[in-house]
Amino acid sequence: MPRDVNSYYCYYEVVVTGPNGNSITLRAEGEYQDRILFNTVGYYWSSEVDTVYPFRAKKLVFSRDTAFISVGNRNIGLNIRPVMD
Image (cartoon, rainbow, N blue to C red):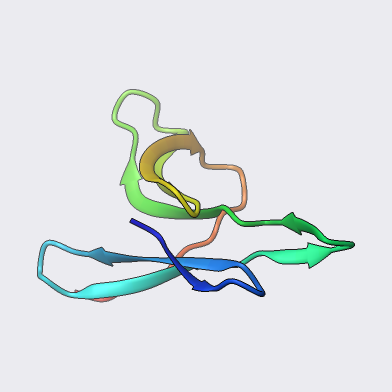
């Protein structure tokens, strides 16, 4: 579950643990403009391509209150966090 790291800048992070037991921390950073909060959702591509529609891939989506796996078209720009086995 995402955790609130800094309530002033409102960024959140989620720790993801892989099958080998190693973990990485992913951030969804937000910002305030005129007292309005923007950009508080994190999107990261996985390396897993959809088996039915190969133009789509799985992605991690998270915000302050939730985290889930979804799919999206691979031609959009999302964050990646490369890791090595």
